[in-house]
Image (tube, rainbow, N blue to C red):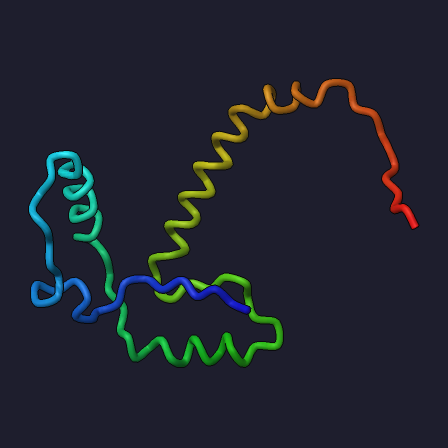
Length: 111
Protein backbone atom coordinates (compact mmCIF):
# COMPACT_ATOMS: atom_id res chain seq x y z
CA UNK A 1 0.00 0.00 0.00
CA UNK A 2 1.26 3.48 -0.86
CA UNK A 3 -0.23 6.76 0.32
CA UNK A 4 0.03 9.16 -2.58
CA UNK A 5 0.32 12.77 -1.50
CA UNK A 6 -0.29 15.01 -4.52
CA UNK A 7 0.87 18.56 -4.84
CA UNK A 8 -0.88 21.32 -6.75
CA UNK A 9 -1.73 20.72 -10.39
CA UNK A 10 -2.68 23.10 -13.15
CA UNK A 11 -6.34 22.15 -13.30
CA UNK A 12 -9.57 24.07 -13.03
CA UNK A 13 -9.74 23.26 -9.29
CA UNK A 14 -8.93 26.74 -7.95
CA UNK A 15 -9.82 28.81 -10.98
CA UNK A 16 -12.33 31.65 -10.80
CA UNK A 17 -14.87 29.42 -12.58
CA UNK A 18 -14.70 26.66 -9.95
CA UNK A 19 -13.69 28.48 -6.78
CA UNK A 20 -16.77 29.51 -4.83
CA UNK A 21 -16.26 31.45 -1.63
CA UNK A 22 -18.75 32.15 1.09
CA UNK A 23 -19.11 35.54 2.69
CA UNK A 24 -16.09 36.56 4.74
CA UNK A 25 -16.39 35.80 8.44
CA UNK A 26 -14.20 37.97 10.65
CA UNK A 27 -13.04 34.92 12.62
CA UNK A 28 -11.44 33.46 9.49
CA UNK A 29 -10.16 36.65 7.87
CA UNK A 30 -6.51 36.20 8.85
CA UNK A 31 -6.52 32.52 7.87
CA UNK A 32 -8.10 33.30 4.50
CA UNK A 33 -5.42 35.94 3.80
CA UNK A 34 -2.70 33.50 4.81
CA UNK A 35 -4.03 30.73 2.55
CA UNK A 36 -4.26 33.01 -0.47
CA UNK A 37 -0.85 34.56 0.24
CA UNK A 38 0.80 31.12 0.55
CA UNK A 39 -0.81 29.89 -2.65
CA UNK A 40 0.50 32.83 -4.68
CA UNK A 41 3.92 31.22 -5.15
CA UNK A 42 2.95 27.63 -5.94
CA UNK A 43 4.40 25.95 -9.01
CA UNK A 44 1.46 24.02 -10.43
CA UNK A 45 2.33 20.69 -12.00
CA UNK A 46 1.21 19.19 -15.28
CA UNK A 47 -1.50 16.57 -14.61
CA UNK A 48 -0.46 14.37 -17.57
CA UNK A 49 3.01 13.91 -16.05
CA UNK A 50 1.50 12.09 -13.06
CA UNK A 51 0.53 8.81 -14.72
CA UNK A 52 4.09 7.59 -15.38
CA UNK A 53 5.17 8.34 -11.81
CA UNK A 54 2.19 6.50 -10.33
CA UNK A 55 2.75 3.48 -12.59
CA UNK A 56 6.41 3.38 -11.56
CA UNK A 57 5.39 3.22 -7.90
CA UNK A 58 2.72 0.59 -8.60
CA UNK A 59 5.22 -1.60 -10.49
CA UNK A 60 7.98 -1.25 -7.86
CA UNK A 61 9.09 -4.40 -6.05
CA UNK A 62 9.19 -2.44 -2.78
CA UNK A 63 6.99 0.64 -3.17
CA UNK A 64 7.20 3.42 -0.59
CA UNK A 65 4.60 3.81 2.14
CA UNK A 66 4.28 7.51 1.30
CA UNK A 67 4.96 9.15 -2.04
CA UNK A 68 4.79 12.83 -3.00
CA UNK A 69 3.61 13.83 -6.45
CA UNK A 70 5.18 17.09 -7.57
CA UNK A 71 7.82 19.41 -6.21
CA UNK A 72 5.97 20.95 -3.26
CA UNK A 73 5.94 18.01 -0.81
CA UNK A 74 9.61 17.42 -0.03
CA UNK A 75 10.49 21.04 0.82
CA UNK A 76 7.44 21.29 3.07
CA UNK A 77 8.27 17.99 4.79
CA UNK A 78 11.92 18.98 5.26
CA UNK A 79 10.91 22.27 6.86
CA UNK A 80 8.34 20.62 9.14
CA UNK A 81 10.73 17.91 10.32
CA UNK A 82 13.58 20.37 10.78
CA UNK A 83 11.34 22.46 13.03
CA UNK A 84 10.29 19.37 15.01
CA UNK A 85 13.89 18.19 15.42
CA UNK A 86 15.01 21.64 16.54
CA UNK A 87 12.30 21.76 19.20
CA UNK A 88 13.04 18.22 20.41
CA UNK A 89 16.75 19.05 20.60
CA UNK A 90 16.05 22.22 22.62
CA UNK A 91 14.10 20.11 25.11
CA UNK A 92 16.39 17.07 25.05
CA UNK A 93 17.96 17.76 28.49
CA UNK A 94 14.51 17.92 30.10
CA UNK A 95 13.41 14.82 28.19
CA UNK A 96 16.52 12.90 29.24
CA UNK A 97 16.06 13.96 32.87
CA UNK A 98 12.62 12.36 32.78
CA UNK A 99 14.35 8.99 32.34
CA UNK A 100 15.71 9.10 35.86
CA UNK A 101 18.06 6.26 36.86
CA UNK A 102 17.87 3.61 34.15
CA UNK A 103 17.50 -0.07 34.93
CA UNK A 104 18.09 -2.67 32.22
CA UNK A 105 15.37 -5.31 32.06
CA UNK A 106 14.67 -8.23 29.80
CA UNK A 107 11.14 -8.63 28.55
CA UNK A 108 10.07 -12.20 27.85
CA UNK A 109 6.91 -13.54 26.32
CA UNK A 110 4.77 -15.92 28.29
CA UNK A 111 4.13 -19.23 26.58
